[in-house]
Amino acid sequence: MICVTIGCGSHKRMIEEWQKLADDHVKFVELRLDYLRKEPQLFRLLPQRPTAVLTTVRRKSDGGNWRGSEEERIKLLRSLIAEGVEYIDLELDVASKIPRFGKTKRIVSYHNMEETPEDLDAIRDEALEKCDPDVIKIAVTPKNIGDVFRLVEFLKRANVDRSKPRTLALSMTETGFLTRVLGKKWGCPYSYASFSKTRTLAPGLPYYKTMRDVYRYDEIDNETSVYGIVADPIQHSLSPLIHNRSFAEQGINSVYLPFRVSKEDLSEFMSKASDSLGIKGLSVTIPHKMEIIKKLTQFDPAVETIGACNTVVVDGYSSYGYNTDYIAAVLSIETAMAGRPVRAGEASPLEGQSALVLGAGGAGKAIAFGLHERGARVIIADRNAEEGERVARWLGCEFCPWDEREGYVVQILANCTPVGMFPNVDESPMELKSLRGGMVVFDAVYNPETTYLLRMAREKGCRVVSGVEMFVGQACLQFKLFTGKRASASFMRSVVRGALSSVHAE
Ligand code: NAP
Image (cartoon, helix red, strand yellow):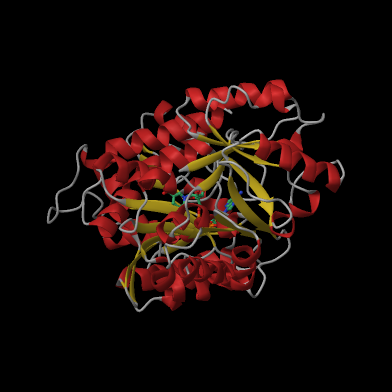
């Protein structure tokens, strides 16, 4: 069950938002009365409740907004119980002073906005012994991924004995986000989510529609397989959306999560990903594509040559790395050249063609490798001459100084720099005069889908391939590696386009 949290300054707005949630089939709502600017008027809020309600009056020290005295707060908590609310949140240090009454269920809570205490079991034991809980809620702040794993192990232990009140343990912030979704696998009775996408009341609290419609929280059970993307930062990744929607479309009991893991935490994350979280596959992106190779038990030879891995399949203690970026980019360029997908075993239309690759970063290396492997003559241009020359030599390609790129006559142009990416949508890494009809112009940038470079290329009669094709292609290949099933590229494409257009509409 998802509990949607509402915190508003006015009673009118709180009632309106509550009704909106009920109209959207939400069954359980938390009212954060500490957000009301005036003294809470229970006669306005409680008589006609559109859903079951949990009432909370959180102090500032626990991450709340209560401005009255502690005495007033305790009085309000007692009144709420007397009114017969379905659930009440009582902090660990006050719960024993407020006795059970009527049918109101007691969520005994502990919050720590600074850290994850060493002895989480002691907090639970105290709640069990002294506070008469129906649910024990522990929400803490991780300093690193180790704190998140510690909380997960605690949660698993806490919910083994199902005759005891359930424990709901949350690790706040983006680093601990996984606990909000996967907690259900380990016995959490519900999870919290926010009413608004932008107005969140706790660090890492997800929007309820994302929790319900993307992560499909209500369908998660013991059997749900876990996948995800490991990155830092993570919030703009479209991978959770594209994979989760594809799982839903094919009726696969799996969930795909954003794992925000810092460079310092990567080793620990990889060593515990399978054992503690049951992870079966990972997408990998900035800044981990190179470093992750050292943590794998095996990898594809292309991973070593490119020096980057974007996909990991995990099987118990073994992990196998792939690079689906280069295959996806090359397949989409070949398709544009042949006017149809090129079949396995067929000669590549890239053979003997010349290609100019702009940028020698992660995407540039992968695409230069792929084009070269298919028999193209590849020239790499990079603004950093030393790095560009080193990469070109390593991959068996030629190098061209950045300022001389416009002078090359090639059949294929591939932009692998971020030039033209949102919000700098009026920039292009090449001038119009350097584009010629009949060329294939590829742009790794996928936000926006039609970059300034691609618009100019169309004007000149070039065949264009957008970064969306590469993004969808690499995701399809990952999906197959993860699940053994074919993903629908057209379905994934429509999901990505929908997400990109809603980003620009905001
Ligand atoms: P990266 O590893 O940081 O490499 C970026 C490259 O572009 C570097 O060589 C960098 O040079 C160069 N560069 C950056 N700004 C530049 C500028 N203003 N002018 C000229 N060169 C510039 O990044 P990446 O992972 O390769 O990503 C590059 C682009 O591809 C991004 O827009 C990314 O979103 C996109 N991408 C798309 C997909 C997809 O599936 N469609 C997959 C991967 C990446 P310096 O080293 O000198 O900064």
